Structure formats: C-alpha cells, structure tokens
Length: 496
Length: 101
Image (cartoon, rainbow over all chains, first blue to last red; front, side, top):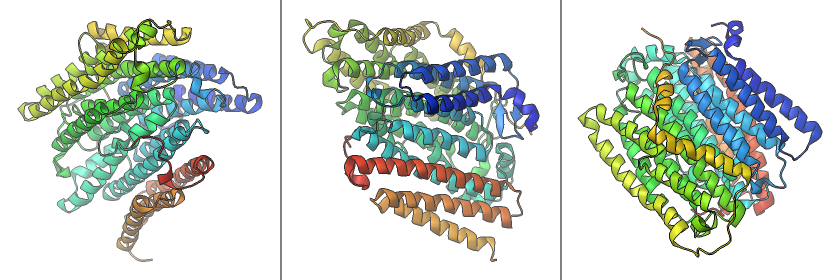
C-alpha cells in the first residue's frame, strides 16, 4: 500500500507520536514533578488503542511500501503492550524510588518505548526490524538508569547498554549478510530468494541466522544472550523491571515468530508450515535445545537467590524458555499457545513485581528476609503474592496453569520426536515450585505474627486487584482470552 | 575500486576486531568503540552489497539509518558512562560491582 493510503491504518501510532511530542514540549516549559505527564501519556495510549480497536476489523495489509504489516497478529501484541504500559504508568505514581527525580521524561520515555514496540510487532522489513529494536532498546537503557544517584541503577544501565549495543551490532551484521545473499530487505522477498539459494551459500546463511538469533534472543532474554537480565532487572526501578520483563519480551516473541514464519519457513500461519530445507540447519532441534537450557538455567539459578527481585529476574528467563518450547513446532497451535501464555504471563509477572515494589515502599527492601511475616503484616499483599507465586509455578486453577497447559499440549501434538521437550518442561515446573514456594513460606511461616498491620496505598491496592482477578479468573474461565488469541492468529504472508 | 570480495574481507576484519575489543577492553569507552567497529563493519557490508551486487538502493538507506542509530546509541551510552564516572570515579566497567554476580 502506498504511503498516503497507509496513513488511514496508522492513526494509533500517529496519535502516540503526537502525545509524546506534546508531552515533551509541556515538560520543557513547566518542569513540574507531579505525575501529570503520566496522565497525559495514559490518555494518549488509551485513545490510540481505542482507534486501533475501531479501525482493525481483521484487515490484513501492508503499510508504507511493505515495511509494516497491518494484521490481527500485530493488533494483538499492540493491545498487550498497551495494557502493560497502562499498568506500569499507573504504578509508577506510587513508586518511592522515583522521588526527587524528574518524572516528566520518565513517562515520555515509557511512551517512546511503547511506540517502538508498536513498530516492532508489525515490522516485516529488515530496516524496520533494526530501527524498532533500537528505539525500544535506547529508551530502555535510559529508563534502567533513571535513578542517576543510585549506584545500582547506574550499573544496571551500563550493563544493559553494553550488552544491548553489542547484540544489536551482531544482529545487524547478520542482517547485512542476509541482505547480501538475497538482495532485499523485505521478509517475503527474502523468503523467496532463500528458497532459490545454491548450496554454496549455506555457511553464510547459517552464520547470518545465528547472528540474528543473538538479537532476538537478547530481547526475549534466552540463553546464551541472557547475561544482562539479572543485573538489569535488579538495579532498574521496579516498575521498569516489571515493564522490561513483560512488554519487550512479548514484542521480541512477536518478531521472532514473524521472522521464522515469514523468512525461514514456507508458509506462515495460513497453511501448515514447513521449515525451508534450504537453510540446512536443524532449526527445530536447535531452538528446542535452547529452550531447555534457558528454562533449566533460569530455574536452577533462581533457587540460589536471596533477593526476590533477582529471583523474579531469573524466573522471567525460565518463562522465556517455556514459551520458546512452542516456537520450533511452527504450528498454529504453537503460536496460539505462545500468545496465550504471554497474556497470562503479563498479569502474573506484573503482579509479582508490583508486590515487590509495595514491600520495598513499606518495609524498605526486596530481599527474601524483608518478606518474613508479610502475610501477617500486610494480609492482602500476602494473599495476592501467594496467588501470583502459584500462578507462576503453574498450579491450577490459576492463569499460569492454562498457559503452560497449552504450551505443553502444542509440543505433544507435534509428534513423539518432541516428547523429551515436554518432559524437560515438566521437570522444570517442579523445580520452580521450590523457589516460588519459598517466598510463600517466608511470608507465612517465619517472622512474628503480632505486628501492626500496614496497607499499600489505595491505587496500589486497586492495581493489584486488577492483576490478581484475571490471574484467578483466567485460570477457571479462559474462553474470552482463547477467543481473542484465536482471532489474532493471522498475519501477513506472501502466498506463492 | 576493487571488488566486492575486498570490501567483505575488510568488513569481516573490522567485525572481528570489534568483537575482540568488546570482549577484552575494560574501559567503558573502549567497549563502545568496539561496538562502533561492529556497526561500521555491517555498514560496509551493506554499501558493498548494494554497490557491487547490482542490488537496489535499500542497502544505502539501511546504512544511513544505521549511522543515525549508532549516533543516538553512542550519545546515550556516553551519558551513562559519564554518570558512571560521577558515581564510581572511574570509567572502568569492572568497577561497577554493586549487583551480585
């Protein structure tokens, strides 16, 4: 579709950009430290989402000369990103760490990140892939180090920027090789060209794919590109940690799925896909092994952590591993289960990090020791945290169980050659039970029970309720989510 | 002028040097210079492919965007390193050890 026609489908992003620009100008002249810019960004986001909802209607097309796809798959991820952003903006108002810092820029950067992710989930052109990843990365580097005077925050942003710049450099080199091999930057043309490559190009293609996987793996924090995750998650302000663990990860998965379906396989979701034999790499086995290593490493190291925030960082690596399990199947069920898992994961993981923030606000730390007797001190927070921990483990009847169930089912459906993967996933779930339950044990079975009750603020209570209700309800009645995901399983693909 | 082959060789040497710098340097600025080498190796690839491969203009466009993004990234990274210097009185990446390994 030509540039002018595309604008009709591009209103949500335009509104978001307008919101960001007005917010920057407003912040420039008023420099106030109230959270007004946050509210402005919130309004812009909700407006953008409403318009996206009204203009969607399941149209599948490409925008701006085939650089962006407009399809239900992208809309799904945009909605997911918007929900996560709304929660994070609201919770940031209650964050004590941000006191004494300018808050205007903070919200503007969050909005820029959301805009970058809007592009990331819909890009079907290598230039757009690189640009959108960089937009998200650069704004998240600043956000991770937003607490300028905190040594920990500073260190986290330093590690983030070094690993981030390095892996995006690796990815870029991979992209340049792909461009050289195929002569195009468009996914669909690359796919056609790869199918016609001679055997002599195999090595180059393999190298390029490995380098590109580094870029994607870094975004979803999969082993061996996960090194930044624990340090960045621990040092960054907690709302940002919650955001990083949910939204960019979802966007990274969107990009990964789109890339592997549109470039390295022959169909996309409309027809049963096969991996292109031209790539000569055992992609399914390779990704399956990566998934197993990712979740095992995440779980094993999480067990040893004494800081709950750091433990949750490792747990988010493990969850990336669970979702990665369903990627090599290239089946409709596989993608369906990843999308479903991401919805469930968003609620429970945001919730867990928000509880960590509450504890930090009221008790002053995020170590496991600070959680001692929390169930008696803050009864509501204790109960809510227990639900999130159960859900992250995947115990029925919580949302986490449904997510895991669908992922395992998709893997089993792919045939007996992948049964070992399900087995590894099941063992890992049991492993994770240990460290999640340790938090619950610490909350209820240690510490004294006669302490004075403390309460989180009103807004925080409301947000926690908004997260815990879906975590339970979607564990019992997940049909609405399932329908939404099923209707989103269509993305732009060139049919040959 | 030379052929595509020469340019690709130079690009891969630059790429390897960049990785080497990122892996071995402990000075934050030097690590960033390594990253710049990697980005420019990719740029050289893009331009060479676009010029000699008889391909369309996308390669040139890509390189332009990469230059812009590299500048933005360097600005942010340098700001973070200046902040590191204010906090730790050093630009050495190893000095930042507040977070548990």
